[in-house]
Image (cartoon, rainbow, N blue to C red):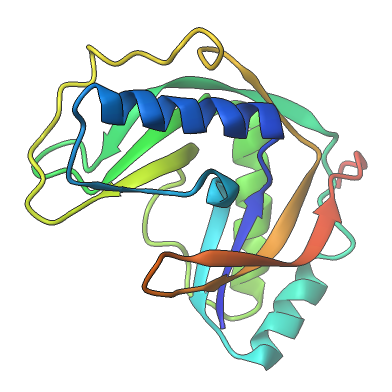
Length: 187
């Protein structure tokens, strides 16, 4: 089972991201496979392929939820991973406010408590818009600022979800397995 943990995105932001994808296509951005707007989420930890037994253990580690009050983060800018060379991912960045980093760290500790290896890359809060096809050239993003309805938009985080990813030739689909609240009680 291919598993990840993420916060859901409210519909108004999801709709704004779809409009942004459309406008980038209209402006000539090519060689990219767009993420369906229904599949955009704020990934807090990718776990990869795990067994049903380990999934149950992970679910128990995350229960009953995180000891943080609900919070908001804001959309900041367009970006690409990696920063140098051929781009692989086009994303909208999020401010890496303390609450978001604390939640990601709390989740990381619980994932590692199940015996999964530590995340190999530092956490960079973002929303993936698309994945570039092989051979894509670096792109200038300064000409493509976020539209007014997205620039600085507030993204509320009051829960996170354990998802299973189903890969298919037409793209991935995501199944929510369990949702966990931010219960506001500090450890």
